[in-house]
View 1 (cartoon, rainbow, N blue to C red):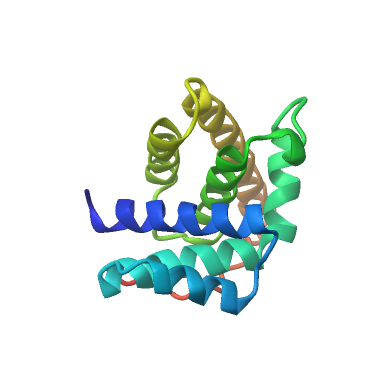
View 2 (cartoon, helix red, strand yellow):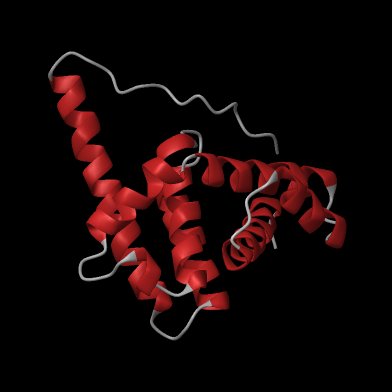
Length: 157
């Protein structure tokens, strides 16, 4: 398994644990890493995904809710919700990761950790969000303004 794929797997596990425990403190994240021992570069990217996702839930959750027709976040399975959050974080804030890679990685996580139809569900919502973001970016360029740049530092491999 590639390093970033493995990092996404760890990030999903951490987000799942934080969500189930309804805990998002630095101590809870540190406790997760004490239980797991990935290579340093994998941990660095996974930790960035976890912290970034948690920090930007106010931006992420409304996008998911808007594009998940007839599904509230509370009604979604914990795995599904956190795969979507992770994917939306990447789409919004990791500009060096191509959207197709983000969506494909999310679908693979869904196939591995979700139910039978989770992959289709994740693909449909992330694809709709990606298209919506592309439209907004295209509209901003057409109007002579660029979308806001990401405040996230570039990832390390």
